[in-house]
Length: 258
Image (cartoon, rainbow, N blue to C red; front, side, top):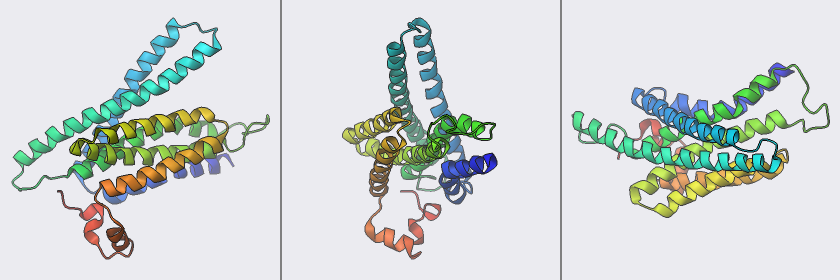
């Protein structure tokens, strides 16, 4: 039973992201490099936020439950702000890198478009965020032990897997919307990405009331997915063509840089 829980939760959490990676990124070395670089930027943001939170805990009153809870909230907010700061830094770096690649390339167009970079970097952020969110939970799911034996919710592992999947996909959507907003200098859209990221992160404080955290998270996921779709140049017409396999250029694998 523990093996079934482990593999089931793993495939729920990472299945969609791995499928996207295999079908749209793995065949392009340049996309793989940018994905790994995006994951590295997320790791650096995590390192900085972890250092600040660790120092804050050490100098605080560990006997005060209210103070420790406040520090936890502070750590979550700081982590989100640092992640979005590093997303912006990565955007600026990719702009410079793309200009350099265009200079070295013999072609007139960029070797990879900003829209593709947004998608790839967002997925890189999501992969690392999901891995750090759920890896310890998956390790515990192998056993020994039984979830809920003392009256707690038996849906802990399953809920964590679905939350991780949502976070990974959200990072991908946030990346697309964020890069498009930076390109068009729509700073209100950048602020919307940051606020929605803060909202989803703070919703996890509702646990173990998993319905109260998962349902709003998936509402945000749907809305950000629609926003990212239109930010990437999508429309109802080309969505219909894509679903009926009549528009091959709409697929990312055959998408020409713009």
